[in-house]
Amino acid sequence: MLLEKTTRMNFLFDFYQALLTDKQRSYMQLYYLDDLSLGEIGESYEVSRQAVYDNIRRTEAMLEEYEDKLQLFQKFKNRQEITNKLLSCLNDEQSSKEDLIPLIELLKQE
Amino acid sequence: MLLEKTTRMNFLFDFYQALLTDKQRSYMQLYYLDDLSLGEIGESYEVSRQAVYDNIRRTEAMLEEYEDKLQLFQKFKNRQEITNKLLSCLNDEQSSKEDLIPLIELLKQE
Image (cartoon, rainbow over all chains, first blue to last red):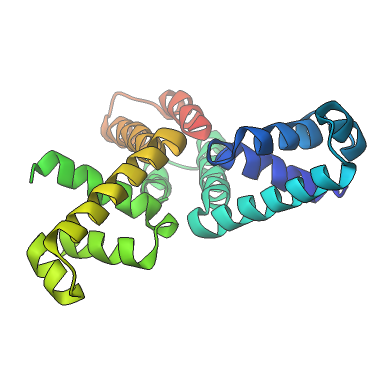
């Protein structure tokens, strides 16, 4: 599994898991957070490896669809970028309190 | 219509409208943003006042359910509160740049 995809799925799962069914949530948790194989998940739920695979693929597509619509992960990344700029501005001896205001105004809009 | 409810519905609509159907979105927009009456909306869609009413009530319930699950409005209010504190801290001659750090750390977690 590509690390980049795993990281993205972990974030999307974090943001949208409340919109999933219990079963979707369990499979995603076991696969992405607990790093179980499809076969292992199938065994513990007494379903085929293929059934687990299909369920997880559908859930991933749902998470991407929610992200298309609500952009919670993207907005989170935008806010993180601004707060990091704020913090480095605070650590910079050269910068004044006034330099922070446009960054905070930007945050209010996110 | 109570002002408090209208304001809340406007916010919830803003956060979750991407998850509604086109028809739900149109009715909500005409009722809450354009301030049309149920009768007027019914006329322009050639449906009964009651049909519009039922659709809007169901949509309101859906929006509240999304808010229960995702808390986007609540989290937005929390962030606004912190950014407002940040701004008043910046306007306060007594406060130093260091006083801002805990507030920014708090923002990162929201």
